[in-house]
Image 1 (cartoon, rainbow, N blue to C red):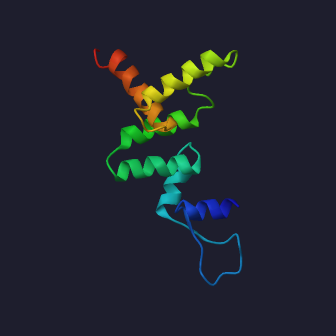
Image 2: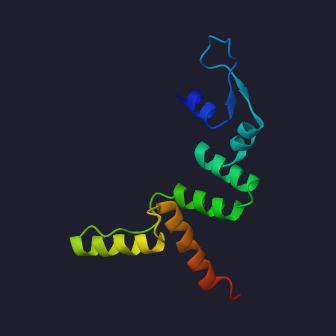
Length: 117
């Protein structure tokens, strides 16, 4: 399973004629992923962010996705859960995407706290 994941992410190339399921060559992308303290798929996100000149957005998104819970969701009553959901969807700006919502929340926090310094 792990070799398949590495192969899907572009970190491992297996020889076509090899019968061994655990053999292969690590690519340059795989070497870089190996030194990043992130999950393989998040490492790939960061690498492609660098390649496509959206590095900051990909770093923030990967950091948010690496957290167990980015925003607190109230579970005590239905009305508060709905209010929380509506707030999250507003921040997602019509995309219904948690990663994009997280990026918008970070950008709003950064604008409020760091741009004035």
